[in-house]
Image 1 (cartoon, one colour):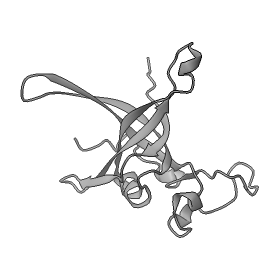
Image 2 (cartoon, one colour; image 1 turned 45 degrees about the horizontal axis):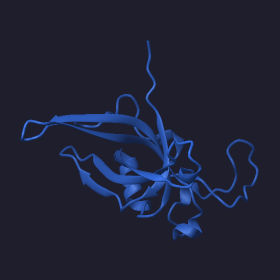
Image 3 (tube, one colour; image 1 turned 90 degrees about the horizontal axis):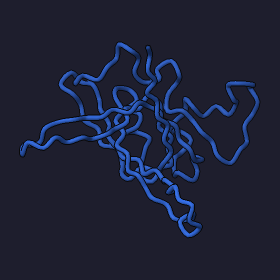
Length: 162
């Protein structure tokens, strides 16, 4: 029996990514995504109120390096990855649980001009033709992958070093 662990989130970065390196030299970037959540309530007064969830995102390798270069606080971003639950014992003996998303793909969800990003930042994705039909796109919102699909994050053999 196979299981499926996939999560897709769209939100804004709460701060610039923090990047560190493992002893083997693998880069690891951490950042938090603020994601709106509309409460499930039948009350008309609650329909306009929103709650915000703050989700920890972790990227590894080349994806971590690209996140560190291109992501900034406030940037509207789509993150696709898998949910991981970290469990550990604190020094006072209490079991702690921390959910996080290990990113497999990161996409910008707003035009470069409104994000304050110059055209030169991601020249590999500045092609204005769509992959499906080769037609020119002229929509207000431009989504772009931070990397080509042939290096799209981790494969089965590329597990994080911890």
